[in-house]
Length: 135
Picture 1 (tube, rainbow, N blue to C red):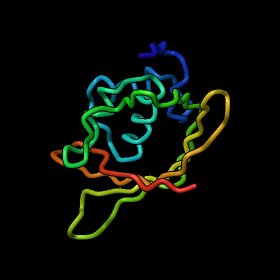
Picture 2 (tube, one colour):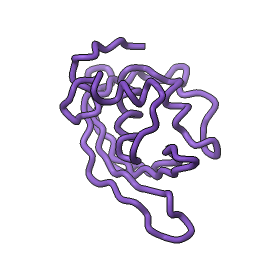
Picture 3 (tube, rainbow, N blue to C red):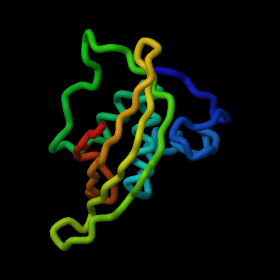
Picture 4 (cartoon, rainbow, N blue to C red):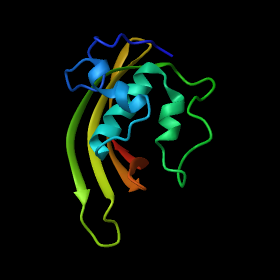
């Protein structure tokens, strides 16, 4: 796990210190919306907080582990949120979508991942359900 000083800029891209941003979600406070959950999960990937990533993954879709043996080491270097919207249908009043671009480096080579992620709020907490990645 990468330690981050409370005063350092938060990796989530909001431009505020980590201690005033995602640290509160990582310590257990519920995220106010799906976008903040997505940003805190990105930050957790940057910092290697696999337990947080798993805890915020909805139990219906959660994998057993995050790490994949033999997989290339990804260094996450930037996040841009493109949209965040609540899904206003009677069957899913507590659902939302967040579209984002995450930039990374693998073995010094730059890449980017564009994803539309779905989230659901259960018992006052937001959870990541799934994501559709596009190029």
